[in-house]
Length: 554
Image (cartoon, rainbow, N blue to C red; front, side, top):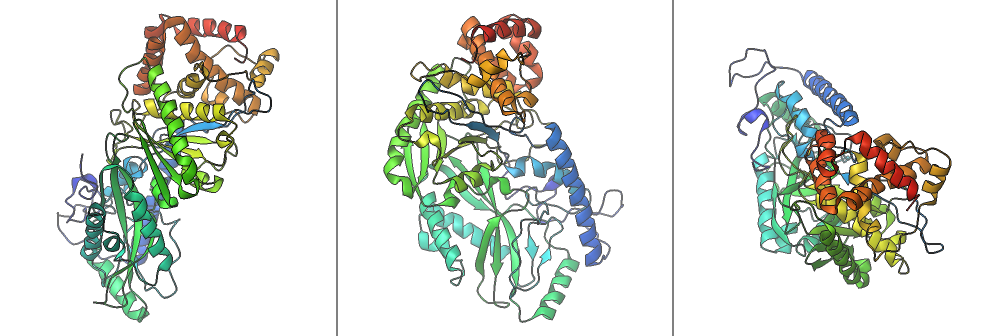
């Protein structure tokens, strides 16, 4: 797999700027025709807008962004104990941006000579406003990096390399040495980051700068002219930085978290300072990670690495023990093919705000858990059906009902469900997604089939059946994610009953092999169903429908 810092779009060497627009006939290495800054900006905006439109269209069809099995919804389940509520949860596949959304942007921009870094795609919507005392920056056509003649890229890359060495050497002072002493908040945040990172069992970790074509001569001429006109403003420049890492036992391959670092210096030749760290454009889905959020305590168990805020230090060990028990139960219940991973990273957030930031589930007021699957640190071309998810991050709302000390059943049920998603996520290709009823049905079947958990019934399902709303057909994504909460709750439960029925009637080994096969290739769902049950879909639905009616809401 190519290094994040060594790849270029279209195979162009990182020292070269890609050629001019396709069909121009320009000889390799020929200087591009001089164009005004306004013309270059207009070209970049047009191509980026086109890329964003295709991204949006593909997201709606599942063709580019692998979405979280459609739009997730929470649901409520009555329990056998009065007043006890089932926790709400969802599964979310999160794409490391260098692997998914940016792949199409690369395709669109390479032909115009406007991009050399697949992780640097030009969306500046989330860029912090430039400080009033900062000098002008020339935005690279690719977007995420900006240039200034007084801040050579090689100097920024040297700082990035020094940070990798500082982390490897556990040298806190060297880790924060490049930070502007006046940036006191950033200094404190980065010291906290260092303390967090040194607790985590990384099998590998490094900071790299993805390849960039660099500015054209006219870019630098413009920057120099602007810098002269704006003197004595402080020169600044941005660079996209990837934190490439692999947590021991949880990540089969490295994944990347993408930042944008902003550098400044008082004048040419003055010390170079890091003055800001933020999310890289277009790839902010990978940022922040738990270690960016708060001071952490890290608890390790054979099958779990659990992060919690230091505010929950007294509870973290107990949570890790329970999560380890949930992992062992899920692993013991599995009867399918060998699992991609058997160790899981779990982050219990300190509050709801942090959970929302981590899970991007602000629209789900009742979601208490999210399983986020990450793509490997490589570009996944359109049409690729072989590159699979690697590693997961399970986020749990530490302020949710499941963490009520009186609700041990709710905690175990939540964690068994989310770890169920994490267990099988690695079977799935990044550019394919299993039907929701398979994904959610399997994850929910684990706590429902655990005899140690007291499962009651779902009153909404009984009402749904009594009202004649049950169609006898396997739930679609639209059913599970219906805006009607009763329909969503019933469909979610019917999905669980489909997997549970399959396991009871044909064996857990057949049911779990079916799940793995559908994750591997969703287009073969009918073939996998027949292989597991000997039935076609129509006959299976008829028999499962009868099972649902015999076991209403349970």
